[in-house]
Amino acid sequence: MSALEKLNSRLADVNALGAAVAMMEWDQQTYMPRGGAEARAQHTGILSRMAHELFTADDTRDMLEKAKGEASSEDDIAMIRVTERDLDIRTKIPASLVEEKMRLGALGHERWVEARAENSFKTFAPTLERLFDICRQEAECLGYTDHIYDALTDQYEEGATKKSWDAMFGSIREPIVDLVRRIKESPVHPDDSFLTGKWDSALQSQFTEHISKAVGFDFNRGRQDVAPHPFCTGWSIGDVRLTTRYKDYLGSAIFGTLHESGHGMYEQGSPMQWDLTPLAGGVSLGVHESQSRTWENIVGRSRSFWSKYLPELKSTFSALPDVPLDQFYRAINKVQPSFIRVEADEVTYNLHIMVRFEVECAILTGELKVNDLPEFWNAKYKDYLGVTPATDSVGCLQDVHWSQGSVGYFPTYSMGNILSYQIWECLERDLGDTSALIAAGNFKPILDWLIEKVYSQGRKYTPAQLMTRVTGRPLDAQPYIKGITRKYEDIYELSPAAV
Image 1 (cartoon, rainbow, N blue to C red):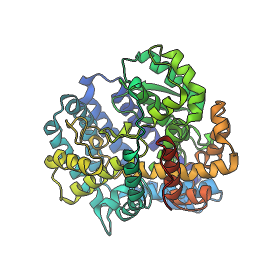
Image 2 (cartoon, helix red, strand yellow; image 1 turned 60 degrees about the vertical axis):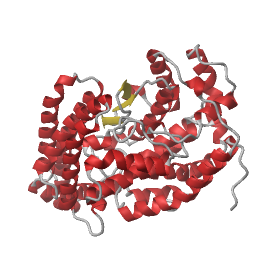
Image 3 (cartoon, one colour; image 1 turned 180 degrees about the vertical axis):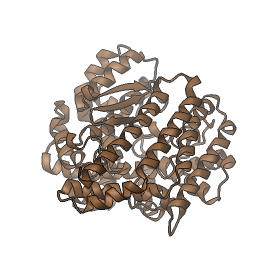
Image 4 (cartoon, rainbow, N blue to C red; image 1 turned 135 degrees about the vertical axis):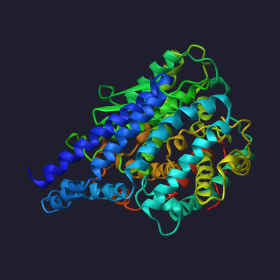
């Protein structure tokens, strides 16, 4: 057996252990009885430690070094590069810390669910404080030059730093704040009250799976279930899992499903020959989020999409008033500062992310104590969005990420918003009238273009390299600013902004 074959065999073993953990995590959030939390925490902790020890073993490094001399194809060379980066990161973190983080993350999820249900931040605070302590230890193990945040966020978005996130937010803050101000001053006030009611969950499941299948998610290689916080996961190109949730606001499940379908189609779009290897899947969370936001917002919140699917929605839900298309379109794009990030409108969404970014940086540096988080959070929401959460459940307890120790993740959501428009600009240049395709329910040319340019590339290139190959330039906020400004000037009948 060659060194390259030995390395691939080792990576397959590591992948299998990771898949077992992912399956357990999916089950915990969908079907596991609450009483299984303690055992599940132990199982995922042990399996994660085993995967870490196997991957970071001395002979893995030896296999990698020998395989470098045998790699000749572009795919093999890319696989070596990706494996080396992953190994360099993982080698710096002790197996004991990996096990503790996974164990506490599994327990933390259950404690977060309970705390959110009971609106009791103080019962979750000790767990959250320990998770941030673990993240600080991780950062110190990984090392950083400028800011502690750099070491953590680089794991989610290769090359990202606090400084780069500051620059990204700086490029969109003023235009967004100005657009929000202009919308507030507009005499147009879309009414979306007709979307709130008691909607049958079985019918919501039926309709959301229908539109997910229509845009291109392959249910022969995936499924959709219900979770407290929507997410997408999977353990092979042939098995990708979506989740959604059903609430009184009908759009919650619809746009949640379209969002997760975007993630799912990205995962399903990797070449089958890369299945179960480090090259399969999304290249970064920012690029991944660009696809969920593309299908949720650019496609799913378009007038064209609902010219096709509004009649079907009305026939599915008899209690839905017979509103005209234009009224429905304005309603689903209503801009209104709110508390919940995942249900925020397209314009104010990034303000939610800025709050979380500032919270993470402040806690990591010790500027903010975990026990003071609710007060800090509420002050930021008042400052950025003009609203103050009435409870911690709709405030600092709303997101699942910190309960699992995912710190450094949130800025990738804003990056995804920006990249979605940057990529879409190039897609439209190649395909022409995408509105006509969407209105006809013909999503195949759009999905095929994205598969060819983005999904099928997996992790073959770095995120920056991929974006330059697809769009000809690195991250650029101008298409995003131009796109949402034009869209919401139309919806709210605003005069064009001065250039």
